[in-house]
Amino acid sequence: MIRIRQMFRLRSVQGTARHLSYVHNIGKHPLAYRNVGQHLKLATERFPNNEALVSVHEAKRMTFSDVLDKVDRLAASFYQLGLQKGDRIAIWAPSGTQFYISTLAAARAGMISVGINPAYQIPEVKYALNKVGVKALIAAESYRSTNYYEMIKQIVPELESSYAGNIVSSKVPSLSAVIMKSNSGNKLQGTISYEELMKTVSEKDITYVESIQHNISPDSGVNLQYTSGTTGQPKAALLSHFNFINNAISLGLEHGFNLTENNRVCIQVPFFHVFGVVTGILGSISHGCALVVPGPGYNPSASVQAIVSERCNVIYGTPTMYVDLVNEVKKTGTDLPSIKLAVTGGAPCAPQLYKDIQSVLGVEQVKTIYGLTETTCVCFHSVWEESQEKVLTTVGHLGDHWEAKVVDQNGALVPFGMPGELCVRGYGTMLGYWEDEQKTKETIGMDKWLKTGDQFVLREDGYGKIVGRIKEVVIRGGENIYPREIEDVLITHPDVLEVHCVGVPDDRMGEEVCAFVRLNNGVNEFDRAQVKEFCKGKIAHFKVPKYVEIIDHFPKTTSGKIQKFKLLERFMEQKKKL
Image (cartoon, rainbow, N blue to C red; front, side, top):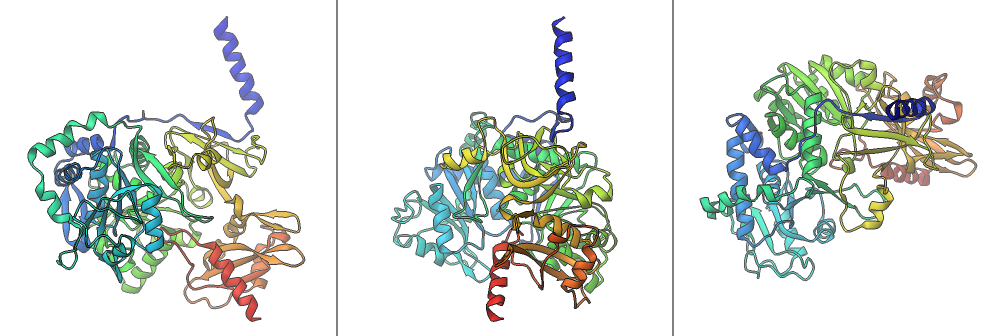
């Protein structure tokens, strides 16, 4: 009798709420409860002789057995330096072996890695070190035209006069050691040699690293990711071992990595970014893939060469990176190997670009991913053998073991198909912002729902579409306009390669929309009259951009995010000249 009443109640609730925007993807596979160190050891046992990392620009190759050996040597050396479990280790270097090994070594040691953007300047690095109390900094001597050693000396004036490993800094009080990989071969006063450090440990020290793995909780922090900092200083999101491993496993399963062998991934996104470290590093470890790094930073020519020389059959990148790859292949006439999968994220994929990825690059399937730093990279993604319509018009399907809902400004569920704020809840939710309880509470409620800040439309089939960022809503004469809605229309124009819309000041309407458009090669003209005509019957008249600006390159962060505030600045500067 009790069971019958419970079943009836469940059906009654479902009947009442079935048209409201809530979806729960229970998942096809159980979650894994282990830490990153145990995960790496398991990969080494399963794929000991598989290539784990190929750093093309460094001419270095490592199997999973090689990786574990180097990782444990570096992890053991951290303890020799007096570092302790839970200490923060910052990594300031381009993508390559140093970043890869250091990230995993921090995890095996039970410490927390902190990825620092290679493009950061002195004030940004100083802030990043102090924000989370970094104890040790691992860095390259230089990258491109930037000399990291000279910059660190300005942040830590005491460096040159300090005994290596015993720094006492007035500007960065927590810092005790700077570990550097020398490009020049010169002695870098006050630093510890990255290459020499791993040579100082004994087999007993290495055995100790293995012995402590069971004491490192999968629920503890493993990595700190700095958010973009679009308003104020960047926040530091703390992600756990559990977050990392399960996000990587889940996405790899959806990509079919468990069904095939010899997956070789050309990774174009940087390692300091959550896309690079979770989908790239942890994803390859989870499924025994070879991770191929074309160069220290993004370069389309290097990517094409790496794809050919290393016979890559999977590519990771942003839409802009694929635009460049397509142009590079067209320009050089390079014959690429068979590529089964291209994964893109960070922006919508234009229909023409989708076709070019398949026809020019010869890719069998193009997949998209969506997520936030705070959700450990991915919470929506394309699934295997998905239709072109779903890839082009959605950010994918809700991932396994995630819940999603869309709410109005009062927190009430909206009907499926209606825009509102996307909230998610699941295994990938960050632990919180480092030592920022207030911001954490603003983002994650007591009920564990995480507010994404994205205006979103959720479908009953579990697929979703971004309408825009809540803070980017343009209010024109009292009407709310979501830039993403306009962008999704204009991106389908055959002459448009990339488009981003921003709200600009207007004396009469309060705000108007300006569309910044990057055109396909060979197209030189695109004006408001064309935009107005193209938008007829697709969006309401008041949403049609009043201004259209042609642009050659969009201002982006190094992780590929569009800096829309710079577009607004550009518009305002041009307006002053009129």
